Length: 433
Image 1 (tube, rainbow, N blue to C red):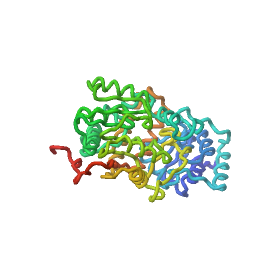
Image 2 (image 1 turned 180 degrees about the horizontal axis):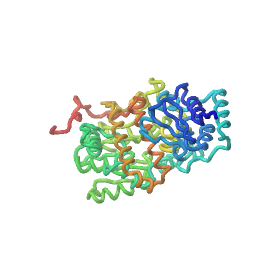
Image 3 (image 1 turned 60 degrees about the vertical axis):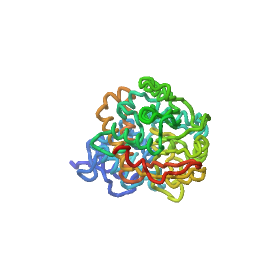
Image 4 (image 1 turned 135 degrees about the vertical axis):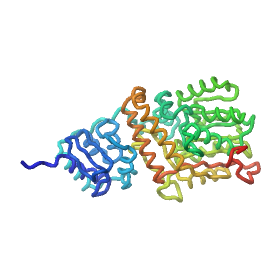
């Protein structure tokens, strides 16, 4: 009897088309137990023919992501290594249209493996906001934020830890751990803004109030925090009351475009401007400029693209068919550092300092991913297995993105004219260090 090779070799050919290579960088394991690809490489397991239908209808990261969220595709070993291998060719990092010949080859292989059929419905964790109004309208922005942030504060506490900070930490002392690194980030922002007792601060995209609490407790500031997430605001207010700072901190559910009770002595925007969008970023900078007192500072902490035309934005692009847009951050757009600095300067702000924190975000993401794995059973109980799997894949992909240098994260400190800029950088070291 001649032994048939099983499904894996044909699956390897299909994966090679998606990755744009004749030599796949992973060990592929099929539902029938057959294997193909280099021994010792990270394992990708196709558990169901249904995964092939998803890939056929959406050939690229969205189809693969759907199959993973649905449990039809598994990464049974080191998920970081598997994601790094799958993205190493570069073809999965952007939605790349396949040629007619490539599509025909996928169709033939799918038919040969008995997987032809109508497109499966996406997993229920997927969202598509293209019918929810104009991109970055106030209603659609609120829906996008709700999809990501209103999944339960208990889930975020599991992943983020007690600090409840959902942005890049500053790892001055890595052995000290995540909580110390997030505190160091908050303190760095406070020092860059030059906070002093009695200063009025606006925290745009305040999350669960962690920066507001630090600025009020450590620097005596009066803080207004705004978020579009009702669940974030509710817990943030509870934390403010528990800290006895209700007279110093106010947290609102409010679009930053509706804040009209300036002026402020300082504005922090930490991990928020990625949600603004390229079309709205000029208005964002202009509005924050108008809320600052003359001589006051703005700290914009944001992810930046390192690809595309570095003279401009690296975009804008339609990301609606990406895994990130459908499962993680709908409508988010990451701009280049060049674009961000240009927007701030065009809208009347003087850039005082730029600090790159890319390796710090890779460490932060690995710490969050470790917490998710350590609390996996509880996370699944809180948000369901599909959403937990989406988060696992998102964080593994994000680790690769920052470790590979494809994206960075930067703090840009700017000042509204009307006061003297600092002659040195006193924020480089905490007072007394």
